[in-house]
Amino acid sequence: MRRPVALRLQAALGTLALAAAAGVVLTMPETASAAAGGATGYATQNGGTTGGAGGQTVRATTGTAIHQALCGRADSSTPIVIEVEGTINHGNTSKVSGDSCNTAADKIELKQVSNITIVGVGGGAVFDQLGIHIRESSNIIIQNVTVRNVKKSGSPTSNGGDAIGMESDVRNVWVDHSTLEASGGESEGYDGLFDMKDNTQYVTLSYSVLRNSGRGGLIGSSESDRSNGYVTFHHNLYENIDSRAPLLRGGVAHMYNNHYVSLNKSGINSRAGAKAKVDNNYFEDSKDVLGTFYTDEAGSWQVSGNIFDNVTWSEPGGDNNPAGPDPQSNTTVSIPYSYTLDDASCVPSVVSGTAGANKGLKVSDGSCTPQSPDPTDPTDPDPTDPDPTDPDPTDPPSGTNLSIGAGSDGSSKASGTSYGNVRDGDLGTYWSPAGTTGSVSVKWSSARTVAKINIREAAGSEGTVGSYRVLNHDTGAVLASGSGAGVIAFSPVSLEKITFEITGASGTPKVAEFETYAG
Image (cartoon, rainbow, N blue to C red):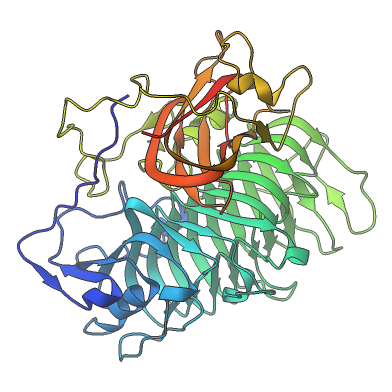
């Protein structure tokens, strides 16, 4: 596989510096939309969702720069594409004032505005402990970003603990190819990953990852908040979520081709008169993935083509009405837009290859094979390698394998495997997680500089590893993410422990060697 090179930005004519100290650059309008392929699902209705298409393109590397871009427009509806690169956090985000904006210091605030695209480019965009808030706004696209560890209690706090939150007369929002994650539930200070309330309508969440949270998200803040709806969820990964995947109060939602893994307490919770259309999803290693839970105000569902793999169901009674163990439709839902379904059996592999930030904006056309976006998209990798003499990432690394002679450990273990097997130089031994996902680490007694790893799969299991993240275990920083084993390069970093986290796989992975290199 050819190494991704710098992402091309087809900026026309001259570039004007604007508030360079705040990390923003303004360019002329681009001919291609940042959102490859256009919106899908309910976001295509009510006039459609185009974001900032046709407007100026701004590059921002701080939260303040994002707010300055909003405030620098002619008015609050002037289209704009904000390309974000780097880590956005409390330290570089401040309130900016202007006639075309209404911002805040503790979040990315899209309030009383319209026609905006926020898209991650280059090395990626990470909103760290800083949520994105959409209020009284319309025609918003958020694409290719990571939002992580947003808290409502503890320090620092942001956005009521929601990664992305929408409220008060919001219309037409498309969130695509993004990663929303927390590090626990309400007791650890977190709330929802993707919340909609108080008359939010025509929203699509597509090709995104939601993980490690007590609450996936809600549609409606209470049993009386039934003004929300017309929401589509497709080709998303929900992983290690306690509940609300999503919680739906009133309104209509369409869930198709999603992969749900480790829904620990409940999943799609249709209640208070809501209707959920649930098509060709893959539910795995989970409990009570569909039904009405924690209320006696029932919702309903229409189901078809779903796979329930190791799903357990509680007994009905009281405030719990699970749809299983043999889910049957109890309503009908008419969908006004066109869509193509992948077979449920291939949803895990398709979602693994497409969902989340920094995955190349790949999509599915219903053939069970990830497809690259339109090559005119400015966030596409350049198909040519500017330096053909450079080794491709599949070339074996040169130098000393730093894993040999160092201790290793991880966060999960399967019977008959050992973490030591990934650092013994023997391709005949391997480590496996307890299921299809898990983590394994290499650590040292003192810091080492690492710039490249090589994940070697055991014979016969090649290609099993799907999506992954490489983490600096010392700080929690994501060094790299992508799909498939092999050589993974990143900016050199000094650390004492590095972790390879498998977030998706087509079976049980078998990692024979976790090699680490300084260059």
